Amino acid sequence: MISQVLLIYFLVYMNTFIFCTSYFDNKADYEHRYAKWAAYYSNIELKKDKPILMIDDGSDLSLVDDKVFAVTKAENLTEDTKLETKRVNLITFDERAPLHHNGQAANSAGWWRSFLFSLEIAEKLNFEKIIHVESDLFLVSTKIREFINGLEEGWTSFICNKYHWPESSLQVICKDQFEDFKTFGKELNNLGLTKIDATRGCAENITPFTNL
Image (cartoon, rainbow, N blue to C red):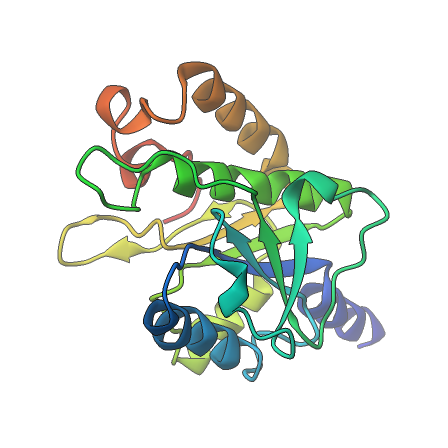
């Protein structure tokens, strides 16, 4: 009985953070998308005192409410950085990366830079699990939140039934996959983040998921 209790404790409280990628340059986008996402994930049981992050592609910080967000420059992140659990941690790059050729943020250099930076955060700050929930995705089912909280290994995504491919906007990456994540990131950085979509394909098709 005691061992079962300890296992449940470990699964729920293993060192984890939740993040989305972000970019906003106007009040409407900030309020209707990013502030809304921050408020939602700050107040559901998935959080359980896990820090919440937005890894940001050089947004207009004058729009940010410092009662909601604690801002850290990506270049200033060190092993001594302390993430907050009462506010959302906005980890931001100074300048926006190049957009996708059609102007979309998905699969752009900025999205990839922010997504790949989640591993640097995890390794520098000794996290064991990364939960990626994109800024237009809201987990309303208690069942899926409990499932995500219980994952302790693998690189998990979920199948989009409409298109029959992985849903890259929802991923759970556990520590046993960090080395593969590092290798994946090095390959993409060596290729050039602006060239990924044209030469390798979209994130849904090239991310090395182990569980679907």
